[in-house]
Image (cartoon, rainbow, N blue to C red; front, top):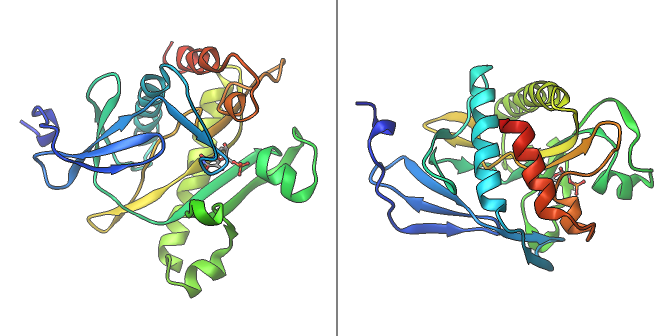
Length: 241
Ligand code: TMP
């Protein structure tokens, strides 16, 4: 029997973030990632609950990680355990949030004084230094290399994978009448291999319904647009259905 087929014993909680908790298992290099309904925005200055979000994000992330694995993008995902939990490989996370943008929105609209909705001629890749107290500041590869946050070799892998993920997910969502506006990825090392980690969900992607441009992601919570739970359920339906 393969390790991942055995029943995982949930051990001690080793980390609690804003939207997820991590637990040890009886396998040294495997963790349980549990998705919460808690929602935060603007570096946790805005807090709330999105009922059912944990279940939705767990299922969507599992499906998207499986899709990416099937296309050759290695991720930390091992298997779905139940409604709110997945088994993952333990990663040493690179403290960078990689953002890919296809359409201008959010932080890029604000930073450059642009209208949301401008379709970019090519995708934009940004690095943000993972630090809430500093508001995840935008940095570039010179900061990353000069401060040894990562190196040339790993950055090349991270960039290549990020654009691959963009192509795969853009296509996947387009088939479900959703535009992938932008999203955030995190990477980490597992046994010297760079893997995609964290989650891919309406918390970490902007998804606009084609035609109506209705926002079906966390912007409904950030901007108090209403129908937050409904939007998450709608994305789940389109991803799984
Ligand atoms: P931004 O436009 O606010 O920089 O966000 C870009 C994308 O990254 C968007 O799809 C939401 C996601 N994101 C996160 O996953 N975590 C964060 O803390 C922030 C600010 C954005």
